[in-house]
Image 1 (cartoon, rainbow, N blue to C red):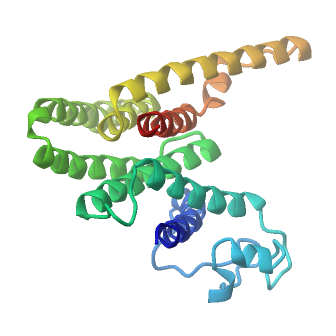
Image 2: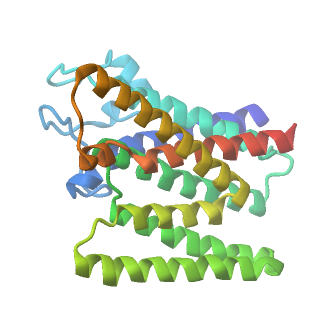
Length: 269
């Protein structure tokens, strides 16, 4: 029975992976992600049901659009596969199986799915455009508030910690809404801080601290490599160019999820 359960979770994962690719492509363009029919980005032809089966459609169509024969980026296929594998991995290390499948287990996994959706969209858009998408960030804040209410119900003793998170949300959102917009200042740093609070809500402070440290190390290595390249090419980049080449949200998201899985795996084994 557990095998069947894992297969179901894998299928759910690849369908979410398909949604992630669509959302990362459409959200920055301001396109609808729920009601607008899927289409080929090259020939704009509406896709049929057989074209939209995650993983399997890519394989059966040979990685090409059925209508214009344009090659489909393999990253879509890879993300769907990885999403399915990741869902199964987390489901397993959470210790959920057919025998202990209950409402609490389903809710915990459900909140993980909501959080992982935020992380993928947050990181994907930041990677492509090097900016934080406001609707995605607000989605993260909303699910964080819902999760805080849930945690207060099952763990009332930690209500003060959740209150601190709520206070930080309010302060940062006020700064972003009133001061940043009024002064027309880049809100990227504030958006990163808000995303860190979201990570604190869903993962432990130890995971977030390690994520920040690892991100800083990764950025330092990246800047060092870029500096060496510039010295070799005898071209000096401006400070503005260097800043916008670093997708901090992407680094934070990757390290946060990796440490999240690692911590669960260590607790399990």
